[in-house]
Image (cartoon, protein in one colour):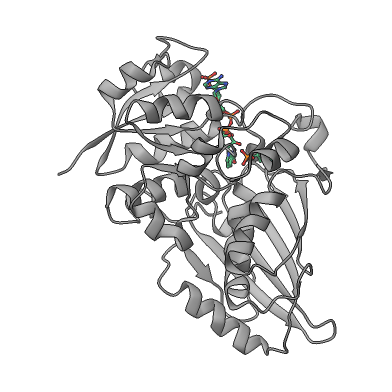
Length: 347
Ligand SMILES: NC(=O)C1=CN([C@@H]2O[C@H](COP(=O)(O)OP(=O)(O)OC[C@H]3O[C@@H](n4cnc5c(N)ncnc54)[C@H](OP(=O)(O)O)[C@@H]3O)[C@@H](O)[C@H]2O)C=CC1
Ligand SMILES: CC(=O)N[C@@H](CCC(=O)OP(=O)(O)O)C(=O)O
């Protein structure tokens, strides 16, 4: 059976450790090495005791050495780090799936405006294929370098794609209300994620300034150049995993809910990880937790002439590591669901 040696940079983080969980059970990807910028020679089990049976020791990041060991590298590294690291890996001939926001926008100024950090060069931005697996699989299949979508954009774009592709949304009418569990902020400590601050609490953050706004707009405009700007806001809620996005849009023409539902069912009938719920049923985050599913429910409000779409994902799975493995499967020509077809963990 084909075996591809892979490495994970940022394995001590939440995205990285989720990649270990998925790749450990993958029939074709073999975790050869786990890399760290802060720990050298430390067993990963010292960082994560739930991996106590694992022999892997963290290694320093040396692109030349990495290219001798592995064919594909997952970079689960912060934005601002990936922009510098990934080009050095590509120069060594490595295939890369990057989980950060550093290569998702194809415009240096736009990146710097929203991320408040220096951008990767335009030349490097242009090398990256945006890996929203369901809709860009053809490009992913012939790529060597994937920029994995953001967690919020994944839930949002899967929820809006059928409407945007039909070009039936009134320009500038989309409103997206998003909520995330705390693991979305990574393993680093912050006041926002402090137990006493978030337990029995909800917080809105980055109001009208979230860095995922231009990512959502740029992909929507690939499907409908007249779709305009979106209003997008994010809330932190007291749970570990999960994202729910509730989206509202005005339509150019009257549609019955049956027609809209049929549009969604048809759009996703050949996409194994998107489950469109039956009419009148709406998904909750627990119903996808630990899985690579994105579940979608929708309704049409006759009074306001607006469609309401609800999508849920697990931010660490479909929003990060699950989609990264999905993209790697497509890129390497393996069956798309390998290693990521587990059921949600319920309750
Ligand atoms: N958490 C989520 O739900 C999602 C995260 N993402 C993105 O995925 C990436 C990883 O996120 P997440 O795992 O949550 O973050 P974490 O903060 O949990 O982990 C990031 C890891 O990056 C490593 N790192 C930090 N600085 C450097 C550096 N200078 N060079 C190399 N490695 C470094 C650290 O490991 P070490 O110290 O061992 O090097 C750290 O463990 C981020 O870009 C994030 O935005 C995307 C979608 C969803
Ligand atoms: C809950 C929480 O804090 N989530 C993070 C998601 C960060 C992320 O995934 O960042 P990039 O996709 O831009 O790399 C946030 O809202 O910034």
